[in-house]
Amino acid sequence: MLITAAEKYYFDMDYNCAESVLMAANEAYGLGLAQDAHHLLSGFGGGIGCGHVCGALAGAIAVLGQVLVEDRAHAAEGFRERCAAFAAAFEQELGATMCGAVKPVHADPTGKRRCFAPVEAACRLLQRELGAPRA
Picture 1 (cartoon, rainbow, N blue to C red):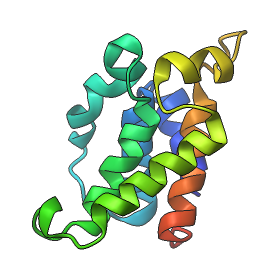
Picture 2 (cartoon, rainbow, N blue to C red):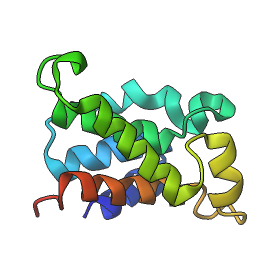
Picture 3 (tube, helix red, strand yellow):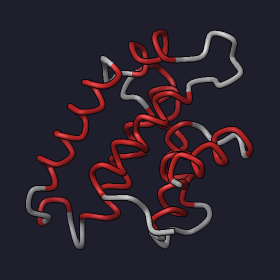
Picture 4 (cartoon, rainbow, N blue to C red):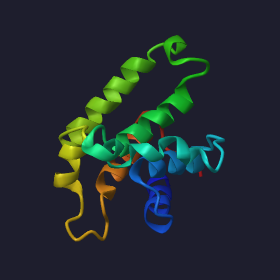
């Protein structure tokens, strides 16, 4: 369900990688985010536009924050470690966390699926971390 929702946002609605992960998780997990919440992650697509941290990873970390932090990140016991473990799992699966290293390997050379592979990986890892979304 999460990956299907991500496909809708990424392909049908033309959201970037970070926006797609966030809004798909919002839909799948019922996070209660406003419809324009994707604006918060708009600048993270394409590795902040310059190949830095992968936008799909940034979107997934934002989801973890929404789900796991009740007040402040510093007050959420184990939050930092869970984010670090998530990033390590992402790197294990894709070989890097930086867009500039992920995109050349995982983007569709035909352009048809753009850079959906990292979005899909981030969604799979979120499901592993948070459990399957409710139907």
